Image 1 (spheres, one colour):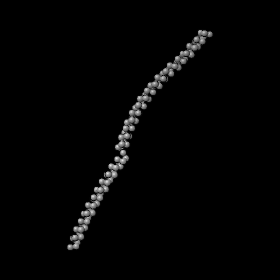
Image 2 (cartoon, helix red, strand yellow):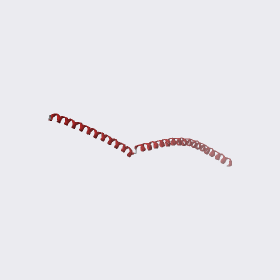
Image 3 (cartoon, helix red, strand yellow):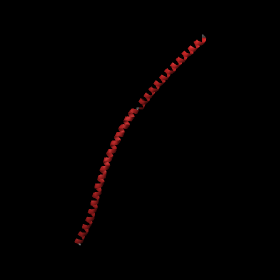
Image 4 (cartoon, helix red, strand yellow):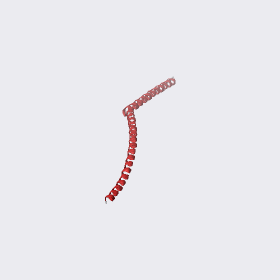
Length: 106
């Protein structure tokens, strides 16, 4: 009768060990989840992500504003070039008028 008792005792011991192992695994999984949550909270990744998105949106506005300013500058440059051409033409005409006046007065 000793053999059936030790077999059932071994079975009970195996079942208890299996249950304890399962409980320990469950505790470790829960602890790992808690650590992950704590890391996310501690790293403030959501805040960092929101801050990054806001900065990206601001950069997009700044780029659009810069593009608009560059187009305005290009228009101003074109106008200044036209004015420069007109000034140069007027300078040539002034020189011609000066020569004619000099010839008339001489």
